[in-house]
Each structure stands twice: as C-alpha cells, then as structure tokens.
Length: 306
Image 1 (tube, rainbow, N blue to C red):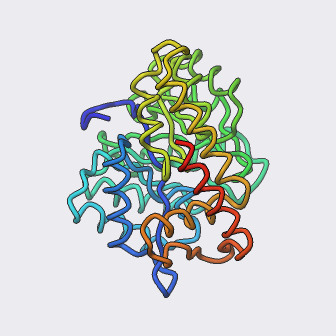
Image 2: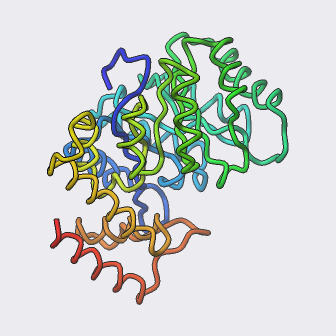
C-alpha cells in the first residue's frame, strides 16, 4: 500500500499480540513481530483485530501499543489498527488517536453488543464517528465478521456510507468466508477494496477484482501470500504459484485443527524460542499439552514438505 493510497490493497497481517507475564501487550516483542511480518512480505499490519485479541484490551492498552509501534519507526501508513468497539465515544477516541500518530486508515467493527439493530442504527453510528472526528485524512475499512460480531454489514449499508462519505469508506474486510458475498461487493462497488479474511480465498478473490487479504495465517505464511498477490494473474499451471497457494491452504489447515489464535501463538513461540508467546488473555486459553505436541509435530511435517 502506498502512503497516499485511497484504497488499501495488498497482504495485511492480522497480527498476533504477544503478552507479558502480567498478560499485558508486550510492546518490544510486538514491534519485533511487526518487523518480521514486513520482512516476510506483508504490505502492512492490521494490528489490534480479532486475531490480535483487541477486544480483550482496554482503550489505554490499545493506544499505548499503537504508539509503541510508531515510535519504533514502523511507518504509520503501513498500519491498519482496529478502532471499532461497542462504545461510540471509545471508537471515536481510538480513531482520533490513530490519526494523531499519523495513521490514516483504520479497520472498524460496527458496534456489536446490541443485536438485531437496523442498518439505520449502524449507519448512524459510523456517521457519528466520521462527523465528530471531522478529519479528511480518515479512511475506514469496514469489518464484516458476523460469526463473531453478530452484526453483518449489508450491501445497502455500504452503498449508503459510500454515497454519504465517498472519500472515507474505502474498503471492507470480509471474514465471513462467504465468497459469493465478496465477489458481489467487488461487482457492486467499483474502486472499493474487498479484502478477504480467509487465506485460501485470496487468489480467487484477486482474480475477481478483490483487493487482497487481512488474514491470521499470514503470521506464518506471509511470504507465500505475498507471492500469490504479486503473481495472481499468472497461469494456474505456474508451478511457483501452485506451490504458494498449496502452502497457504496447508497452513490454514494446520492452524485450525485446534483453536486458531492459540495455535498461531504456539507456532510463534516455537519460531522465536520465547515461550511467553504462548500466553493469551482470558477467556482465551493456550493449547493443552497434547494439542501443542500434535501441532508442533504437524508443523514440522509442514515445514519439511515446503
């Protein structure tokens, strides 16, 4: 993604958040992880999202982590922090804070506690955020993850937001796994970046005109995802493209046999040789010893087959 890009396109990692012994975000270790992901080929870091356990952290913790990353010299234009929470004023505070440190693109969940609210209610929430912030730099990537938020983002709502704030709502992360929904948005909203949340779907989505991905498995196969993003227009017979896509599919299978975030953190601990990476903030739990043993054995076989 270029600094002046209006539409975030590329491979963005839904970055894990390492925790210290007090179960607080470990700033130094997170900065190191961000550098690793960028070195592996990610275009940017979608930090403080679902995979990053963001909804287990306070506003102050989220702000402090973002400040630490920017202070460490990682370009703000390469960061897509999650700023959408249940409370309107906190969403505004997090978004305003991101802008204050030079980040202009955020990923924003809809307010998710109250269920069965109308599109009018969700529109009003997003509208209040944009109007109260009143900053032309702000770009918002919507976040459609109905399995987790129980608050889908309809096409009618996207249309209304884009019509009212055409320079602000520039894309959407679709973590539903519904490929038909993704392609329908690509067709209906030209110039709107549709980013898939399922790694294996990035290739077919790109070929339909999608913008790339924000995915969890990029924490371990960013290099393969970056290759697919760069070469998606190549023939299906290209052995390197086929190998990269197969590796992505296998990696996704590897980390979803057991709870995904715990599995990814266990693999980060194995890669870095720092056992603290395995910590998750309750109510999420680390893998059980038998699960960890199986995962690491499967990961070794996966690495050997690469």
